Image (tube, rainbow, N blue to C red; front, side):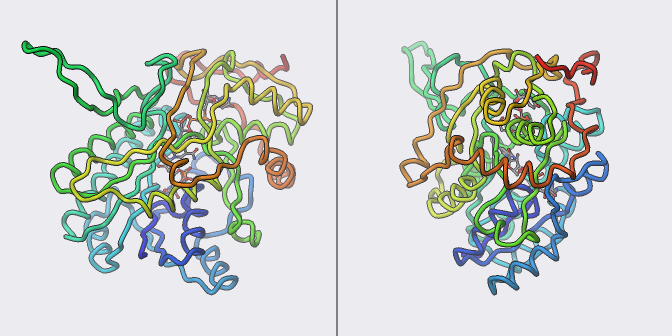
Length: 399
Ligand code: NAD
Ligand code: USQ
């Protein structure tokens, strides 16, 4: 299969590109390297020493003989080049990771909010529009987020895979309708993913574009069998207050002896998936596309759920790290239940990596191995959801 991986230099996109190439697909990465530019803006680097994209691709060819092409292109700003690329490469499928993905970054200031909306919504719309204009039947797999459903709206009711059946009162009695699950975004970033959903619904109905939207939970872990082949292929590991996600942050904090930074009570329940399972899920989604004329196919891409404080306690037990309860810089429910339906991927053969299996390996092979590269001034989350919620570094005290 000829596959374009949009955002293929990123944390999920790079290991997915290698996995797809490894199983015989013809992969072209499209990326404008904006994530590397944001590292420069934030004056922070991946904990792992990631190599430039050209070197990554050369090493992959050297080791496996497989070629991956790379095109530097901004999805949101270079529409004509994007459409021409589709006509030229004629892909069977596109995997779309190419968005600004950090909720705290998206809440930093007006510039970051506007960039996140412009980049993500225009980029996704450009991809859909280019598929239609190309006249090709290209299946699109998009990375959405569990956060489109929000946390707590439906209490402990199971979160379905995308759609909810509701009763609509009419003068002739109730009728049943299937609707997109109500959107309840918790940040400007999550808001863009809810807007993406409407773009997909429209283009599927109007133009019969085939779309799979993967509502992914928080990805943890770093390496896949392919990225672990050679240190020059290593995947990125974000630990800073904007881009680092909670479990990887806790692992890194434990490795350098920093208290684990629990926001509030840590009663937030979130969904998780290991990066090794992300790449398998993308493969499964590519192998099981919807038919033309179908509504967007939605999979919840998660393997387990945990409360933040339980994760902190688990890591503290393994490593002896102290736990610090910080004022929460976000606006989010202090405690929530999360009951997620995830039948699709299990039915299609996913055999998930459990937290209990991968944690020690991740701590030893990544967090401890590269801990000397950490900049401790970048750990505390400083982006706040509303002015006046600023977190003081003095508050990072053990419990
Ligand atoms: P990332 O920031 O590491 O990678 C995104 C890549 O897209 C980067 O390489 C960036 O340079 C590129 N990009 C961004 N805007 C672009 C544009 N306009 N044109 C071309 N390239 C562009 O993020 P990630 O963690 O790999 O996430 C990938 C996708 O998966 C995102 O859409 C994110 O919302 C989703 N997701 C991620 C997680 C997670 O925990 N990392 C969880 C759920 C969903
Ligand atoms: N949290 C802490 N301490 C920290 C960091 C985070 O307590 O040091 C808490 C946050 O307050 C939040 C939870 O942990 O309640 C998760 O935060 P996160 O930064 O790990 O994840 P989030 O902001 O939700 O975003 C990440 C990815 C995003 C993806 C999303 C999936 O960055 O791209 O869409 O996970 S989900 O959360 O399922 O929507």
